[in-house]
Image (tube, rainbow, N blue to C red; front, top):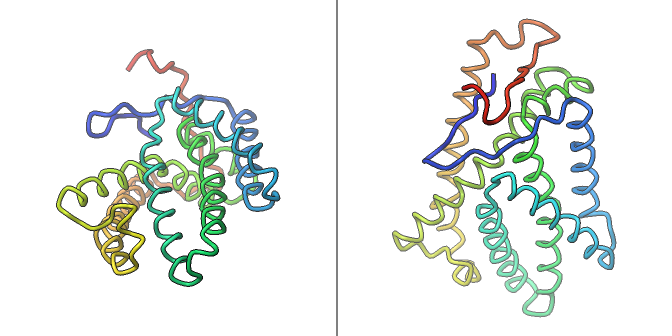
Length: 227
C-alpha cells in the first residue's frame, strides 16, 4: 500500500491518477525520451530539450521539487569536467558538457514520471509485462526518485555548511572527489538502504508475493477529498 504524506513539512507531489492506459502512455513516453537523449544526433538535442522543459514545467505545477535534480546535474558537471580536464586537458571540455547534457535529458523524463504518476499505477502497468515482484521493485525505484533528489539536496547543503569542499568549482580539483563520496554519496546510500529495508518489511507484512496476481490500491478519492 502506498501512503501519501509530507516529509519535513514539505508538500508531497500532486500525482495524477491517469488510470492504467494513461499511466502506460506516460511510461512509454518517458522510455522513448530517455532513450532519445543518447540516440539522437547533437543537432536534434535542442528539440528534445524543449520537450523536457515542458515536462519540467508540468512537474513543477504538480509541486515536484526540481532543486535536487539541479544540484545533482551541477555536481555531475563539475565531476565530469574535472575528469575531462585531467585526462584531456581543456581541449575536450565541450564533449564533457555534451555528455552531462545527455545524462540530464535522460534523467528529466523519469523525474517527471515520478512526480506526476502514482507509483501504484506504474506498478499496475508493469505487472502486465513482467512478474509482479519485479514490477514492484521498478515502481518503488521510480517512486524513490523524489526522495533521492531531496535527500541529495539536504545532505549536500548540510555538508557545505560544515565546510566540505564539494562546491562545483572545488570539484574541478580531483583531490576533492573523495570528499564528495564520503560526505554525500555514502550518507545517501545509507539512507536508501534503510528505506529499502523498511519497504521490504512493509511488503512482507502485507504478504506481498503470496499470490501471482496481487491487487493494486484503488484510490477513488480526490486529493482534497476525505482523509
